[in-house]
Amino acid sequence: MPQIDIRLTAGRAHRDFGERLRAVAEETVPVVEAVTQLPLPDPVVIRTLTPRRWLRDHKRSTKRRLTLEMTELGLSAVRPHLGSARASVLGGVAFLRTHWVAIGGQAVEYAPDRPEVVICPEALRHCGRLDDLSMLYKIVAHEVTHLAQYAASGGAVWRAQSTHFPALRGTTDLDYHWLLEGHAYAMDQRITAKILGAPVRTDTTSPRASARHREVVTEDTHRAQLRHLDQAADGVEGAIDRLGLDTFNRIWTSPDLIPLEQETGMPEQWWGRWS
Image (cartoon, rainbow, N blue to C red; front, side):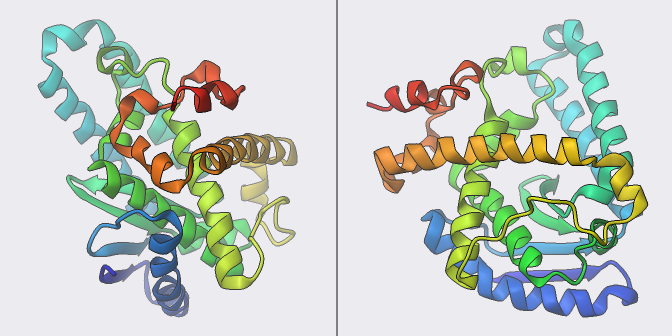
């Protein structure tokens, strides 16, 4: 089992949350490894941070990835795509600036080859979930599953999902988001059921959510997001049921098995490509 490195950088006001997080992580991380049957980075780093630090780190890493891709692909190749790439960078920063109040946690690679989970207690307060222990289990299970995806693929699936130049990477028609979120959602249901006796779900907005949270997450958008996650999780669960977990986990090193966007609505087509 990997070491667990909890870094509390969200300020003294959230020290109690940090200690709850430490206890939940120590219980959850080994279950993630057992349920997914995937390796984890060593150490597993989980960091609490302030909204200001979250946005700053996000902006820096997004710009760094853009610069790195431009260097790897060559300026002549990327020049026709620079407009859409820069719009993608600005759009990602703008989204986090307005929607951080609705995001419980993220699995990120803010520094090269150093994947980690970041959790903003202030965001959980806006969500009405700061003291919701079952939700903390779900967040840790979900985001650490993303770390397992990273470790199993050597980071390849994260890089493919976050590329600013999908046309040059050959990923335009591949639905990495559907796969990665569907897998993490399916696994967090299994993991929380194993630990708590029943899977943890978020079918409704918390009645304690702030007005600012409700401004960016309406019930209609929340339900639409849940339907998308349910469909993705069902597609991944179907693949695992049909193929077995060992066979399914080949996907993390087999780009040819990544689902096409046209297949995510009919996952039977995707499953059929494995034989």
